[in-house]
Image (tube, rainbow, N blue to C red; front, side):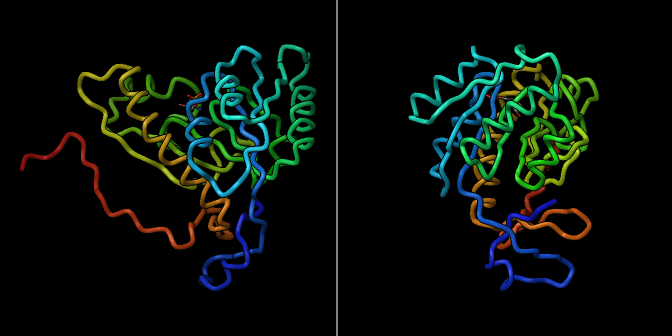
Length: 237
Ligand code: GRF
């Protein structure tokens, strides 16, 4: 995985981490398939970067309108126009590269990407997944969490690797699962946290503060260590 650190990493260097010098990522492509609420959170976050294009695989994605309202260029690469997944991915890469995007942000992008595509953007392809990975990869994560009787659920921002929903983790947020939750109430609670952690993760990347150890794990230079414990249900006082 390529690093996204900059020269400032050197002054924070710790021996157990390999701070290979990377680039500060400034031009961002956001890939969506639907409403694009995470995209909207990113557009409103005042990131030190340029969202150079929002790309959807579905021409009907309502997030495209939101992007246009924010004055962001949009593009559609309709997966239904391609017989083979690899051809869709080639067209997608061409669109990303035409806009000279350095960082590719998946925000509710509902297509499985080929290993070739993932490897092409290695270290600069990021996803948000609505579960606390490695728990509940794949689809219907809130349903999975409820069915498993999980008491704590959440979301994860991670680098994308060829193995689905398995890449190095950048940031996670946890929420309680409440006794009367259904999929939609739980999804809404998680989504509110997605809108907090995704802009934070991308900001760290833009600032060159996301680095990876030789073992693949991510460290955020200068991030405060979370010390709040979430216990669900709460213990008796
Ligand atoms: C989010 O829950 C995201 O984690 C998942 O798909 C959903 C997309 O929502 N990958 P939105 O399009 O960002 O509103």
